[in-house]
Image (tube, rainbow, N blue to C red; front, side, top):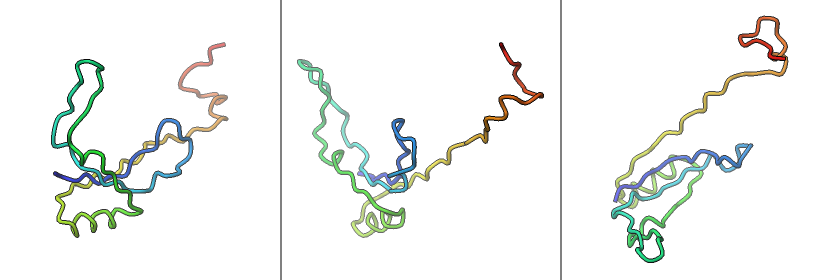
Length: 101
């Protein structure tokens, strides 16, 4: 019953950074999911997989886990590797890729 504490990345549908600074505490699954043979639904009898607790800071999430005696694992967020690009680079005379039309 290890708790996982992490800051989720933004979804593919987001262009801004709203709701990305929060931290989430959720439990690792204790049982494998089972596939219903008739309908094909996946289900689990593990109720802790439904618990998700949101915190504003990592310290609050760690304090909660310690206060309740939960073993936890913190995953630090990875910073995206952004490349600085500008519109004027399309028209540079020393372009790395040749102009094609």
